Image 1 (tube, rainbow, N blue to C red):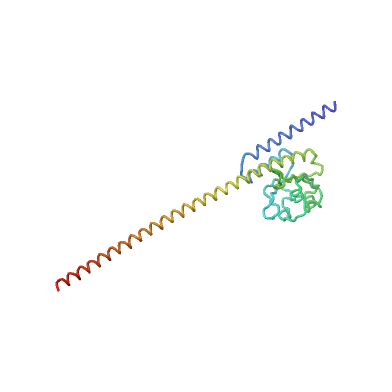
Image 2 (tube, rainbow, N blue to C red):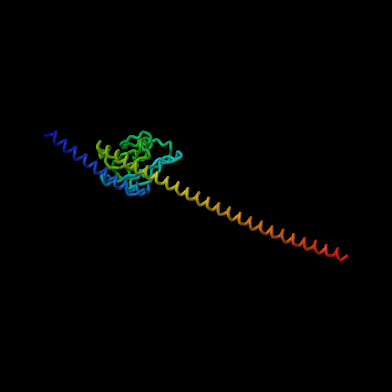
Length: 239
């Protein structure tokens, strides 16, 4: 029946989605190096979705806008001149603020979309998906396609789930880097403390040697004074 066929089709789709998510999770868990994680994740995303190009931007620090950290393919939206601007009015910034995925297929959403289409002589669109972890948007992932109808609702659900998987990997990598930096700083402080202690011991050793030399000179002076006094007493006795 139609209902059974629809149920079987949905089951197949769901299994494919779970398989894709498991593949992404396996990929991003293989390293804690942020660039390696994102490069491998993006390659795997394009592999499991069948899309031709993509890129990942992370939210910059200190209001510096988006920062391109990974790319695959050659579409020109990777060279977006607005990405680094904190006040840019484009789809990427909107997704970063809203946390909701969108289909970008109009130049009002992306100023360079027309140029992309002109370069390729065909219509171009891309899905802009938030990279999230614990309700925090860490960046965005763009997955491009050369046809405005290439993304279905199921694709957005899958990409949104992938965005969560990648977000967890990004957060883990950031926590690892933070812990690594703290450990390096702790090591530097420990080395500085040990060096200061060694310098202090050396200073005290020099002070002790100086005191010993001073005391030695005092003893010599006392001995000379006594010898002079003894000589003087002897001379007075002879008189």
